[in-house]
Image 1 (cartoon, rainbow, N blue to C red):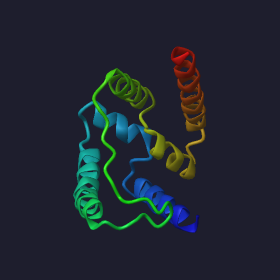
Image 2 (spheres, rainbow, N blue to C red; image 1 turned 180 degrees about the vertical axis):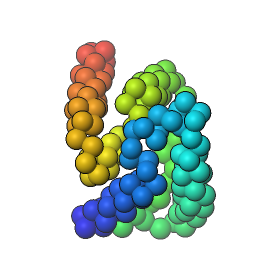
Image 3 (cartoon, rainbow, N blue to C red; image 1 turned 45 degrees about the vertical axis):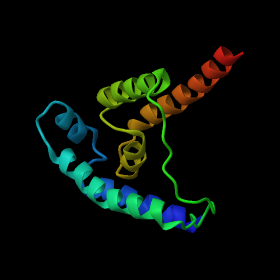
Length: 135
């Protein structure tokens, strides 16, 4: 558990330092006015890409779950497309994604709590709808 907390803390501090926990910065990116987010995401991909590549070929197990590192592949189906559209629309409306929303609270953006509540309601509603459609 402490390892998860430290990881979340590093992630949140990184978002705050890069200013990606500020919705106005993200909205400026989405309106092609500020490309700083592109550099932040590119830097993250440059770090994460080799780590995922090496971890999935190492044969080692994750320290918290004891599961073998493996890539989870999803087929491109209607659920993935619809989820991506809903995520993108929510990101565009609020100017912030779920991880950055929590970091945004940490820097004093209290109005984002309404958006976080909406994420919980939406996730719950999606689960209820999926159960109803499955029956």
